[in-house]
Length: 161
Image 1 (cartoon, rainbow, N blue to C red):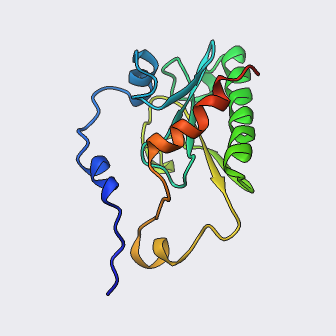
Image 2: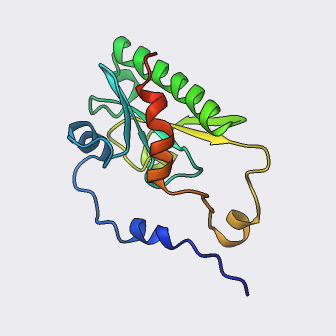
């Protein structure tokens, strides 16, 4: 049997449960780097997913704690979608992503991990990025840690639009 070492993953496993809403906590936090917040607009923000499907997996969320699409204002929606598009452009540039999964999970049965606060997932994809690991062992191998990913992306998100 061969072993696959991912010793940096232990930090995720030992992380304490988050109290309150993940997105409201990140929204209100003073330290963007600690919370992996990459960009803040007037109505929404972009942050790294701490449990990514792929390197560069981002989440784009309105600031306001709203859990259904009908509750989003036109201003929030416009900025939220624009931030999603910009996130895709940056991921394509920095990581040379060849495609994307962009999705919104509304409700627990639809896969929402945080039910009460809408957020779009932006997951970069590459030809051949699926392999036997998720199929046979229910594991996904990520080639770099979150801090490294954050450092690669933050400069692009700080550039004027």
